Image 1 (spheres, rainbow over the protein chains, first blue to last red):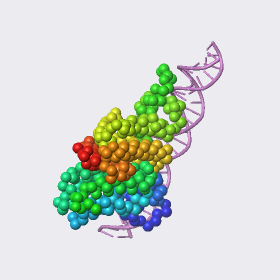
Image 2 (image 1 turned 120 degrees about the vertical axis):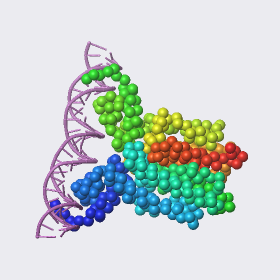
Image 3 (image 1 turned 180 degrees about the vertical axis):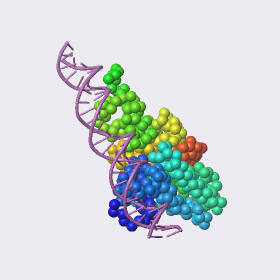
Image 4 (image 1 turned 90 degrees about the vertical axis):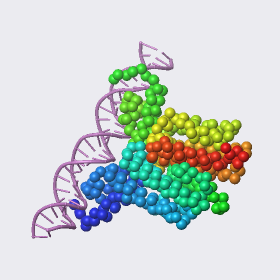
Length: 205
Length: 205
DNA sequence: ACAAATACATACCGACTAGTATGTATGTGC
DNA sequence: GCACATACATACTAGTCGGTATGTATTTGT
């Protein structure tokens, strides 16, 4: 009835943001479309105009919000000029996500991956795809470090990269369950100790 | 109507097992009581005779199935006579859980922790409690190793224990999302490399 | 200016949810 | 063998879910 001035792009963006919040807090399957509509003031007709169904909305949240943001966070590892180990530790300590405000919410990627990867291939493809690219970025950074003499030659970069990603997600997972910043930092300190151990001996700080 | 011979303990156990399966596959909040009843052939009246509500059933699954099994798996770390690093690596490689058959299902503890710790304190207390005891067991084992000269003295056992638990859960989480035994083993190999690096130099194998 | 596509809004549907009310059959103590 | 608690069974409820049918208002192209 009371139709205000239209702005379809803005409507779509508002839906995506509200859907991200709802999914981040409730998980995808418990995320309620009615809640998302309540959060935005958008009606169901508008939602189903912009997205064919709940699944498509979920995919769009991953593709257009979660993955781009996470990718941006780790982008710096691609720069050849930087010491990969320093960069790795720096990024790990950043809380760039405007979302990483509350440890008890966990990592959006990990949350969705754990909930959905066994249930829906579309989610699994997207999230595993990102995690795999993330692992690759770390692996290449370590390899560059070996070429530059910054990383020990005996390090298995493939193994180390997978291990680092696992430890990272694990740290955020433990901290979420413990609901404790301290747990997060203890785990990340452990990770930093490990990552530092990958330096060549003359680079050890 | 067709009432068979009664065996309340067996009924309760059947409900617990079916509830575990359903929760393991669907998560607690998406676990359907009707599905659990279908799996067991038990009726709703029987379920609500043994458990006051869904939440109590979920808690019972954690207390009586998930936690005892996981605790049993790591019990050997308490034995003073063993080399803690050897034991850590051995246990990590075991697939004792009759449940750990399929990587794509993940770790039951981690699954529930990630889903429920932000939503329900009862679940969080139980799961965080177990994870914390697990971390402590590893920490004490590493400390014993230091006393026995098997673990390097410069290792921060508190930090290392938290890191190991995080890496462990992270490894199972990544493997679940990747749906790949290979990913699991790569991550666990990375963890083993790290754990081996904690040995005193004259113990390095 | 008018048609057609776009962008909504409202009301509703069937399926599924946890939980309950009520009845009945079985086992146990005396 | 009788009383009583235990252990179920059946039918139902109120609420929520994703999705749809159908309407209307707004833009856009010509």
